[in-house]
Image (tube, rainbow, N blue to C red; front, side):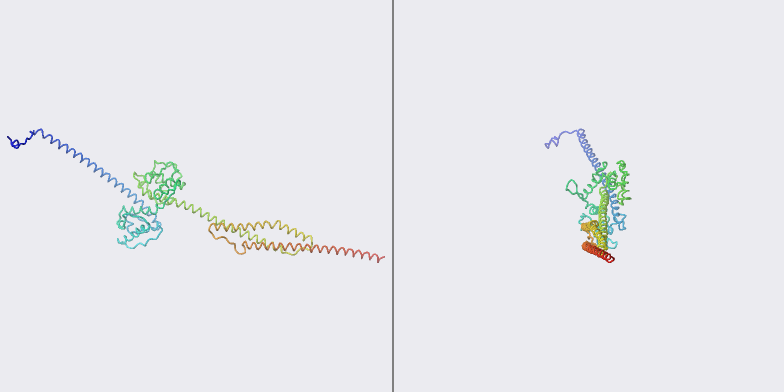
Length: 458
């Protein structure tokens, strides 16, 4: 009896040749499975590595475009004070250019930059700029002075973008005509672009990326405000995006004075950088808005100047007319006060006819002029009050009160003239009656003398 049997344990009979294949099959399948998993892991790892590399490349490309665009944008403002930067990541490190930029954008005076090139001086200057932004209620997340001084590219780009949002985009608001809803910032800017290009069938602005790749939207914005700059707009097509982009950017730079923040190769790409596009478009928005405001202000100024010229003309007309009528009154009074009457009743009666003709023919038009002068002065003063100007006041001797006193003197002279003429006529009539009576008596006396002479002669 075997030991196995002796121990009461029955072991199955195994054939070495039969059991070995099963073991080998198990190992091959496991190895195959492990190989497949390893292959999949390797493929997935490669895919992930490729995706990460691709994302990093895209991020680097966008960072490069943003850096170039933001650098040009910063310089477009700094050139107003004779400054510029060459490297966005290093030239802001001392904080001086950052302080100047914020002063230009805000119109406010920031604390004076600390002199010196040591790190502590740079940190102090950048901190002044950051403190100012915080006072302007600008939220700077995870951005400190040391990040700017140390040249942290991503945070510097974030800082510049935050500044653009605060001082260039935040105040853009457009109220839609069909509703009371008020859009702001990015949505308002997009709505503005859509409104300005709505009349162009070949332009459809939906975003700040792909909608601008063919360059037609840029050309459309320019053509909408200055059609004279792109007279060939109807000939532009989507098939030549680089030409369209170059045309728009060149016109903006050469004819409008807008810095060339972008190049065609920055826009006509698979993945357009939205922030760079927005930065350029907001520059166009402010330029065309200012152009519109300048046009409105120009019309207002022209209206004010026109109103001032009209007022000046009215004042000159008043001066001329009041001088003319006062001179006429003075001359007329001098004529009416003349008491050198002719020594003949018929001629004095002619004087009375002439006086009555003066009252009927000469005086009424002058009286109408006097009334028109009062209306003219009232209109002039009311117009100047409405324009918040100091009302015109005639100088001494040319006032309406002076004219009224002169007119009263004229009427007094008329009354005295009429009395004088009538008294003279009565006097002349009495003299004629006395002359007639004397002549009659003289005739009778002469006849009596003649008759007496005849009687004596007999």
